[in-house]
Length: 359
Image 1 (spheres, rainbow, N blue to C red):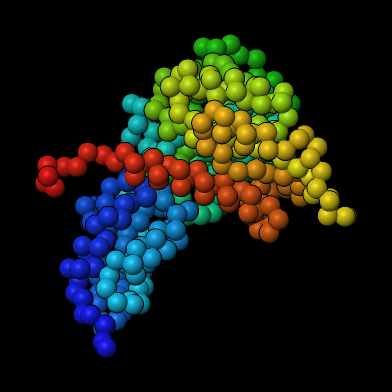
Image 2 (image 1 turned 135 degrees about the horizontal axis):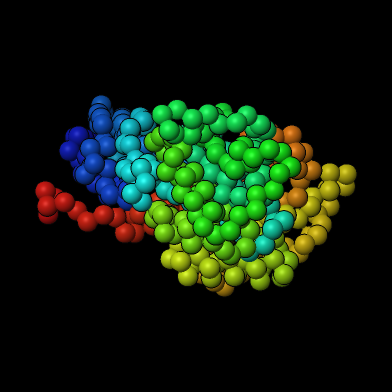
């Protein structure tokens, strides 16, 4: 018995429930279904997605494929192609910054690997295909230039600082503007002015994500950011032991107090897997951040073990190299994926109101 014939309209109707991972609105409403063809048992579909959702392209392709196979009559052979869609960011905060999501990476205390996670998050999103900027707002202890191997000073063109380009990642840091070894001794108003200038007077261009490496603890810069721009949310980094978790809880409370949503928790230094005997050592305990995240009702984005190679690459300024290491890459890729997936789920659950044309 031959398979029941179908037409293009049936395919397009089945696609109406598929949401754009960036906006949460149906692809059909945003003219992102670019081509549909039906030839016998073969169904070919082309959809357009932005670089913002690049980490989720393969997920979306798989979802659309499975949805069509289950929705259409007969055993259809479905092929889904994804083409790039250019959708520039809108200016936010009244300071000329054009970024779709601004994400602060913070911690309750120093020494938990916050900057390593912030840099890795930015590198991972960039490698996935997103347009990413990285602002080192840790004015007192800027370590982002070291982690990326950058020593050059930024230049100014038409009264705008030009961020340093590191493999396509745009980066700016106070560490590039002060001589090595010199301390920055500033009070609150000067910090506010510096962060404002970094956001307003840096030529960031069109960004999908601006990742901000925050100073450790709770203080002035968090207040400054909450006043300057609408932050998408914050990622909190901690280690598994109780004393670090206590400080992480304070950081979460601080972000909540200034109305910055918590996008998730990352557990760094989760364990050490000995390369000599393959035995796992929970040096700082294990799983504490996951349990605390569940207790507080915030997402857990992933864990990063203690790995000598990660430390060596950070010291050598080769943080991008972690994504070429089969032992390190899965941990950082998981964090990037979990973050973007959670953002997409939030948009899907609360998409913008439909326009009058579709009522």
